[in-house]
Length: 187
Image (cartoon, rainbow, N blue to C red; front, side, top):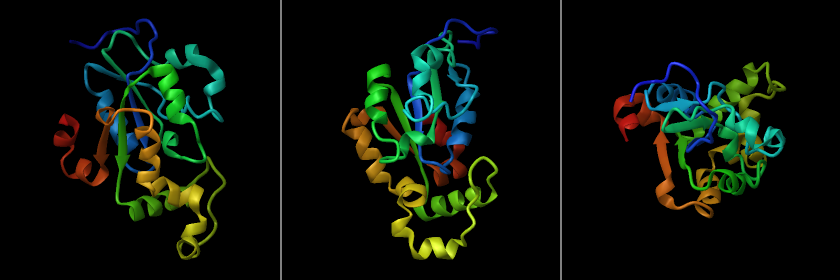
């Protein structure tokens, strides 16, 4: 199948990259968008299923981000794996999409926390982090929503396994993606 030259009718996605933040979701989104049978949303992190973000825009808005001319349509929103901050996401996904394929990107959890911290220090999109990392690390158990919960992969994945069959969930490990991108993408 060749890539369509122009957009066709809107459709719903059948593939979601659900997290974790700072675990290669941007790279994975870009790599998948290069495949001729995959249409990845032009805007990464639509965050539609986060009811505090774009859920109120409705399904028609969400559909407008995808192209029915492609057999696979996808989006990437690490916010979908920020439970309990973003509770109810798997249920909303199920209610709209049924049982899409889900890709959960992970990496060494301590490295993920450090990368998240660096982004927050350098951020202009959020309130920048001003505390030294040592202060955060020494009190990490109280940093649950910002740092620790995003690296609590079992907590995040269990929310999805309560709703979706295991065969719908595929894991991509950032360190493996970096070492062997072709092999990981083939999987």
